[in-house]
Image (cartoon, rainbow, N blue to C red; front, side, top):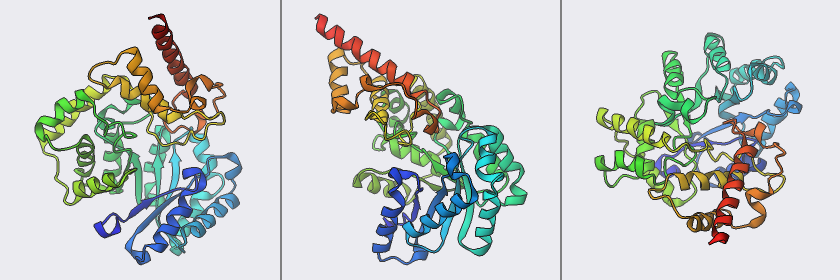
Amino acid sequence: MLDNGMNYFDTSPAYCRGLSEGCLGKALKASGYKREDYVIATKLSNFSPAQYPLEKCKEMFEKSLKELQTDYIDNYLLHSVGNGDFKTFSKRYLENGALDWCIELRKTGRIKNLGFSFHGDPKVFEWCMEHHDKYKWDFCLIQMNYVDWRHAKAVNKRNLNAKYLYDELTKRNIPVAIMEPLLGGSLAKYNYAVAKELTPLDPEASLAKWAFRFCGSHPNVMTVLSGMTFEEHIKENIKTFSPLKQCSEKEFEALESAAKAYLGFNTIPCTHCNYCMPCPYGLDIPAHFAFRNNILTMKDYPSAKEVLDEYNKAIPEPLRRAEHCTGCDRCVSHCPQSINISKEIAKIDEWIDGLIDKEIAK
């Protein structure tokens, strides 16, 4: 990856059940590259009230340095500001002195750049913009893709249009980092209605490539984060960005038409971030939402048997299926998209039960 210019690594103390920073630190140390050859971005992920006190924030930062095997962080983020209300933001970063402490870290060089990732409450984003002259944000991480660009609330009522966020940041010369360029992978999966708009313009381009080109075609974008599962994903992303072909006006128009086509399917706005996991009762929550969304976007709606076959493939372990959801709602507070998870899982369970009854009745 580093050989091909992919040098930005985004992590957090909260990712992969707390293992992400340690694994990344070992990998980068073993890479043979010099520390200045790559950029590490990690976060002050003090989501629990027990982590609000400044001393706990300091402990989290020191642990990040140890896990990442470095003595400084290139890009340090206040993690998911706005996920909650302004009162929550204030408790996490203002009342405890955490933001002022981060400013001191930047002054001493222990962090090079200070930014924040944003989800949700517009009051928090507006406050951050109003106080830019004081805090001098070096960058901001936002959810941006060709659907959320103008239609964020159609995906999820709590979200703000990426265009608004991008424009407000750009007006203040704050560089933009992008998360969810593929909207949790849903913009990379085949969708006949979306492909109908885009494929005629470039028959060989994957839908993922279109999504990445959209993001990269905006001049104030400093990096586009991509969750890559397989080596072929890495190779395709390198090919897409090396060099990047800027979208033409005609292509932007086609992407807007594709966004409207995508929205016609009423999918669950899960971005597969896995913050809801692990479920205490063993459910594979993201797999359920991906299964439902995939069925909705098929060109020809499958038969009951075909849906059940797909369900068995998506969630092969019976104990991880929707019927085992207790509705405890422990997952809900962790979801950046504020999905009513137990309600949606219950709908899937009811749907599957109805299909089973239909098959039995044959």
